[in-house]
Image: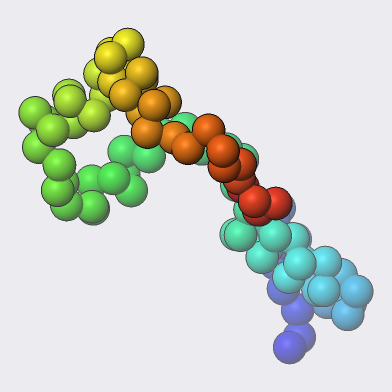
Length: 83
């Protein structure tokens, strides 16, 4: 390999400089800056939950549902060390 272009399109030829360009490139490629717009990604995923099902899943739990879930828990048990 003779050289590489860095982020600012400068041509670098030294071994250490090319190593830095490669590390920077792949670090940027495989890390995130906490993206908040997933529209493009989600458009490629087919919907499997209907609007009605989604509304049911997104509604707040009722007091009755919370009470029922709590009473289903065994009071004599605790989570193990892994949760």
